[in-house]
Image 1 (cartoon, rainbow, N blue to C red):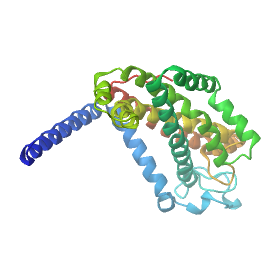
Image 2: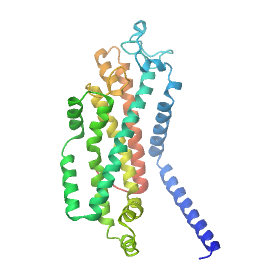
Image 3: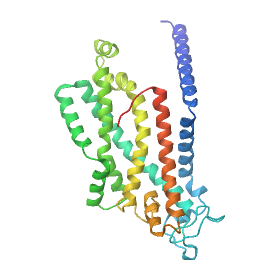
Image 4: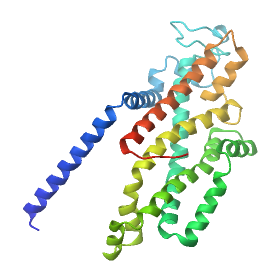
Amino acid sequence: MSAESTSVLDRVVSAERRELWQRSWKRFTSRPMSVVGLGIIIAIVLLAVFAPVVAPYPEHAGKFTDFSNTLQPPSVDHPLGTDHVGRDVLSRILFGYRLSLMLVAVVLGFGVPVGVLLGLVAGYYGGWTETIIMRATDTALALPPLVMALAITSALEPTLTNAMIAIAALWWTWHARLVQSIVASERSEEYVQAAKLAGASTPHILFREILPNTLSPILVKVTLDAGFVILIGAGLSFIGVGVQPPQPGLGTMVSQGTSYLPDSWWVSVFSGLAIFVLVMGFNMLGDGLRDLFDVEVNR
């Protein structure tokens, strides 16, 4: 094939890809809830990244006390009020978003690659390899993530790092099961057989041929999983085995505020709303991506 023909073919492929992305984006934006979810996530990520700049009192995210301003209701100086030691609730929520997003990044950053790799191997090779991997996966799936995380964090020192380890310990299972089911059906497809006949290596077939066809459901599941990870992390912090004071964990803030209900309602209510908005944003985005890619992800 001449260089000119190759150039023309590349332009045609590029044009088709641009058209595909344009159609996909149009389908995505046609669902208002999906766009709202994406906007929420982008806004929260930006607020978390620039929290030291946008927070009214960034020093309140650490070891700080101001007993002259304890449990002040929402006002101009403190839009969401102050907590039991005089710290600005809004500032702590912004820094709390940082910790929640960090938890999501670490847990999914570990769980997704491990689960995807095991799912690829189990689905492609089948036989005893699939049996061993999937029975181990089924055993791990029988353990509720929150209970397992509670057990691990109770045995270890209750810190954010140990909470991440505890939640990540079981999160790979969901992705292993999802990818294995997809690969098991894809391994007999013509494009896989053609790659084998062409002499392609097993890593090439797994990562260059099959894996791209699993990315859509994986992306959808990652987005939906982010909300579950945040809720589990907040639950651990709420009962005192997750983020520890004075770190501004959202679950910890809700727990601390319950001691002052109903009079000083703003500490728990606004912290709980912060969790709700973040989880809802991920769920709406995940639902939009699921409709966009037309995939079904079971949990």
